Length: 269
Image (cartoon, rainbow, N blue to C red; front, side, top):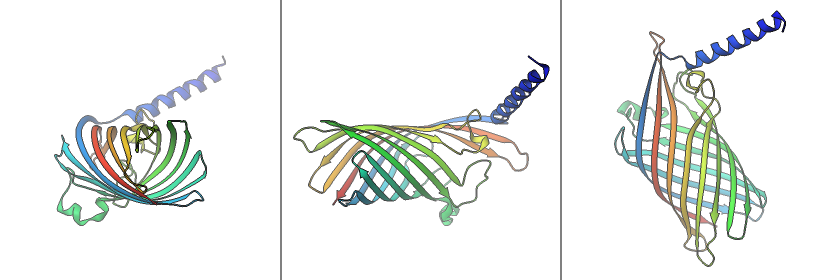
């Protein structure tokens, strides 16, 4: 191998090592683990048309009955407007908006309540879902691009004002012959797409959440149904704090184990 080629390869390796070292270099590192149990209540209303168009609005409230870090509290409210279109039997498209209200946490104070930007979040999403039905089951795969927006002031080196993630969900629901119930099960992965450089894991984007849910949908009337479910969520986040005076970079790796039970009422017409 020529000397020039060897030098070129050596330069590439040195640049890669420097880049990785920069991504992994922190002045201090810490780790926290949170255990939580949550109760969820929701309601959804959906209007369907014969041409495959669907319009829905839903509300969900989440309460932490137990939280090892901050104690019991109201956690979040989700208000969602969703527009869907199914051009063929096997494919569905969705676009929607969600208003999220963040509840009490360890930084909750009167000043935070006075500044709405601290506790209001906006979310936009676009989904493509493919499904296939068998005699007694239906399987589906959903890919969702999601944009979370915040209007408060943040340090762009620590966190994003516009945060993109990709959510991949796969699952199945089952038909019980002669019964108005449909058991179901799904698993979802959430992957960061534009985490800031210092927040990345080993210089790369990372899986921030793994969720699995099992439940039963019970058709109580022609238009109404109830959804009873249990969800387990594993969450991983990398909280960055860059001190202004010294410029030190502090990393806290935050792990969350969340157990949730809930009930949702749905009206379709």
